[in-house]
Length: 191
Ligand code: ADP
Image (cartoon, rainbow, N blue to C red; front, side):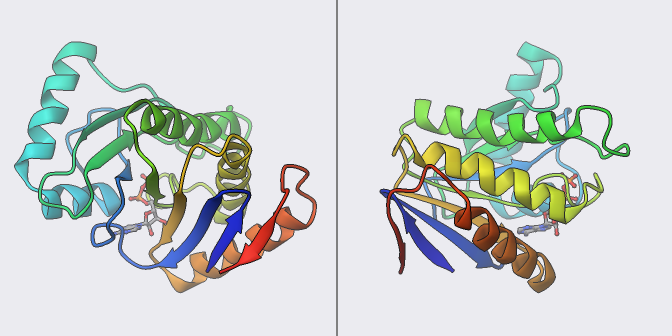
C-alpha cells in the first residue's frame, strides 16, 4: 500500500527487508550490535561481514548502544546503501517507558537518516519479535512518529516492511485510522 502524504510516499510492504532497495534500511538490533536472531540475523547474514566490522568499531568507541538510540553503517552486500541500527525497548508490561523508547528508536533513526542525506528509508516492525512489544500499540507509535516527519517533507519515501501478512494487515488498519484524524495532512493521494 502506497500513499502520498504531503510530499512523502508512505509505503506498507509485506515482505523481507533484506531484499528491498532503499537508501537506508533500519535494523532492530540489540545493544551489543553483534547480530542476533530475527531481522538482525537476516540483515547480517545477507549483508556480509562489512556490516559487523563497522558495528565492532562503533562498539569499541561507545561500549554499547542504549535503547532508543541509533547508529549507521554500510549495508554491505544488501541492495540498500546504509543500515541504521537501533535498539527498541523490550516489552515489560507497558509501564517502563516502552512507548517513549520505541518512539525514540523511530525518531533517532529518521534524524540520523537526514544527517546522512537519506531520502528513502525502510523500517521493520521494531520490538515486535523477540522483544514482545504488542503489535497494535507498536504500529500506532511507528505510524504516528513517521507521519510527524512528513510534516517537514524531508523524505521521498518511508516504508514499513512487514514480514507477516497479519502484521501487514494490522499496520494497514492503523494507518487508515490515524490518517482519518491526523492534523498534519495537507494532501493524501492513493498511488
Ligand atoms: P526485536 O528484538 O526488536 O523484537 P525481531 O527481529 O525479533 O526484533 O523482530 C522484529 C520484527 O521483525 C518482527 O515483527 C519480525 O517478524 C520481523 N522480521 C523478522 N525477519 C524479518 C525480515 N527479514 N524482514 C522484515 N521483518 C522481519
